[in-house]
Amino acid sequence: MHNYSRIYVAGHCGLVGSAIWRELLRRGFTGLIGRTHAELDLLDADAVRKFYAEEKPDCVFIAAAKVGGILANDRNPAAFLFENLQIQSHLIDGAYRSGVRKLLFLGSSCIYPKLASQPIKEDALLTGPLEPTNEWYAIAKIAGIKLCQAYRRQHGCDFISVMPTNLYGPNDNYDLQSSHVLPALIRKFHEARMAHAPSVTCWGTGSPLREFLYVDDLARACALLMETYSEEQFINVGYGSDISVRQLAETVKTIIGFDGEIVWDKSKPDGAPRKMMDSSRMFALGWKPQVDLTEGIRLAYNDFLAQCATR
Ligand SMILES: NC(=O)c1ccc[n+]([C@@H]2O[C@H](COP(=O)([O-])OP(=O)(O)OC[C@H]3O[C@@H](n4cnc5c(N)ncnc54)[C@H](OP(=O)(O)O)[C@@H]3O)[C@@H](O)[C@H]2O)c1
Image (cartoon, rainbow, N blue to C red; front, side, top):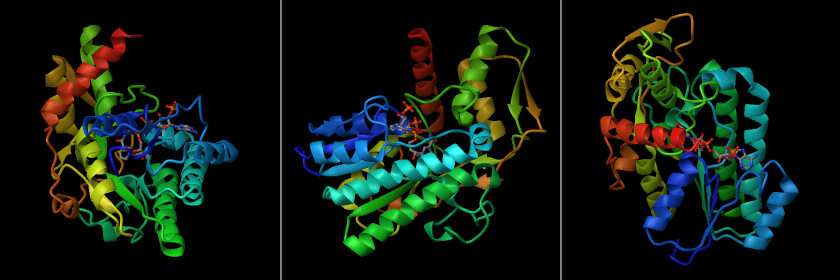
């Protein structure tokens, strides 16, 4: 990747895509290419082919996907499986056919078995059953990894895959029907504070352990990997330590300044008991997170307030 490379960031308006875009600009890359969902529907194979033929990118980051939390996954299994298979297949095959030199596909820690031994190493893939609440999404992501590996083996394409842990930060989705745990907590505690509510109800028992990475740290990792990593094996990118959902809720509550009670709705699913990735291969490349969780939640809350102000 050179400063004059033509770099396509698919999904550049989303949480991850916008962070990659910011990071590339910060590093001085000038040939960035982005299309909104309205400008280019990645479910349309012909439109994607035409886009590649016209724009001829040198490098591609795939941060476009149909993304959502447990509730959205549970309600829309067909959409999560079908749309993600289509989006990534069109982008990966199109990249091969138009001669893209390097491609980075973003997967997710949900690819790993529900009861994988912790911290989860890359070779835990396909060693046990998936977490049922998001298996549709996970199957699509596993197919994306395999597509990159298959195009590398059959066609010599330099296509790599990155598995980030749970992410948060600017441009996150705060819609309670489709959001992940941390943005959902930010919204719930904010609204409860504004309404002077006596309590906030959170899903599950609060006991699952989760890892959270500020999205700008992931973007730095992606830029580094695009420049230096060319292995068939995908690579984990995590924070390096985890906390319980209960501790997370307490932290968000404190940062937002809500002084009511937290009630745990134990009828709702917890998901996997622990999901902590082993990111030692990434750390060995000289990368490490720069934003700790408390600081990151403060930054994310400021972004949430800015989003509220512009509505
Ligand atoms: N968020 C996390 O915690 C997390 C954790 C690990 C891995 N990841 C991975 O990171 C990647 C990006 O996730 P994200 O959190 O950044 O999601 P996001 O904020 O929802 O961004 C996804 C982007 O893809 C676009 N998109 C979806 N369907 C499209 C289509 N048919 N045509 C064109 N554009 C389309 C969306 O546009 P619209 O919004 O306009 O539809 C959006 O801009 C995903 O592969 C995800 O698995 C995310």
